[in-house]
Image 1 (cartoon, rainbow, N blue to C red):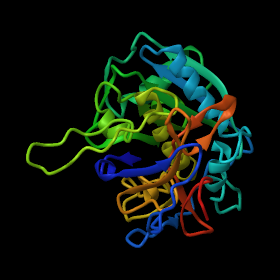
Image 2 (cartoon, helix red, strand yellow):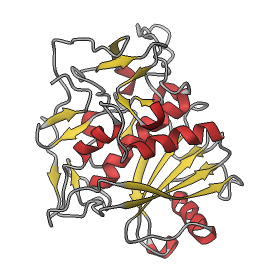
Image 3 (cartoon, helix red, strand yellow):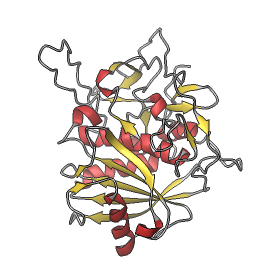
Length: 321
């Protein structure tokens, strides 16, 4: 789960024309306080995982295309550093049978719930009812290799959204949906809290007398603060649901219901030198849009790094070392 703690204190250095800014300090996260451990549960290890999107609320087709292209990019080649290169770090995690996390995400179905069938004020628990509506009306209930992605539009409110979370993952209860399947929820924060869940594309307003000075807002690579912010959160949650789908896989900490997962360890780290309040070295294109990975169809995205088991630190494909 991606929390809001730490998001307000990040900074970013980058250069134009695809060049790195060289940062002498190389924090790149730390697991000194949290020991990442494997708890003998499953990972999402199907050779091919079927991804189902539930678009809840009213969506702009252009925004949907941007998100789809990111999801296609997970398993499709693009110019280095790419989204699929980033996913290779996630794939390092395996279960007790020796099976690694899936290499292939296939967009296998979509459901458009434009009537807000469960209202515009949701709780975490109501996400399962949204999935039940989708599988009752159109989508298959795929308990073998299915993963469900519930995305809510910018006018939908979610319990704890903007106060404690930007996205979360969990699994359905068979008594509600009919089977146990992993799912992810992410909302569009553009109207509610872009400074929280779409940072660095939006900035928090300084409190009077706080001494906090807003930094320059970074331009989103696809031109949409809310959507580019969502994509970073989607990446975060996809990494974590894949490595800890039933809350007994890979995580740190003592509480399985509030785990520190493989993306939590690298919250706010997007490039080399990241950590300690610094986002790290990333790129700017000719229009000064900020990104760190390439996707299909010439897309660019800014997504955070994840914990690399082999290097024992945060890592991404745009790393300088």
